[in-house]
Image 1 (cartoon, helix red, strand yellow):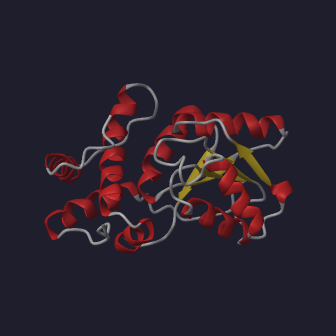
Image 2 (tube, helix red, strand yellow; image 1 turned 90 degrees about the vertical axis):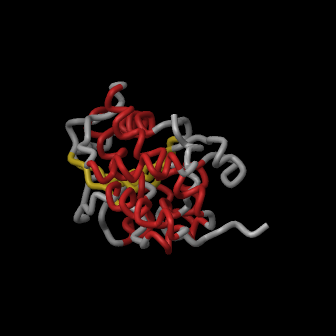
Length: 219
């Protein structure tokens, strides 16, 4: 059976609303280290590798273990596969650090910080590379668990439709968007991240998508 890769007209406006909300639009600048957050999306490693070659950071940490949604694609772990991709595409092995244990965003950042400390790499600024719809949550999490560093967020600069085609599954992308939107407030309430403003239009779009059945990634 062919997996749909076209966003249905009935939900497009709401999906676009959430997509825009999670894109922080940070202006990229040189930082002390890049951190690629593990996921099902190899685009994180692709972008981190490109930004390394553009001179935006001298070190890159890839962080992530496995999850039910990634173990089939990355059987040796998300960070391991990301690191292999970077080295295969010209990043010197000595510039790549792999953190293979983290299973959530707070651990991604906490364990990366500890790894950098173990290697005596001073860090005042980080450029976090994530899935497009993880930018806001990554930023809010970093501000809580690593408040002393300046944070810049980046992701694959694809438009929404291009991104859906790159993943190959509309429902998966929309479910993840909805799940990450819920986590903005839930994680702040649970002390996992700093609070972020959630505009009314985002709340309404989220509610309609939940009502439409895009719920597999809800907590």
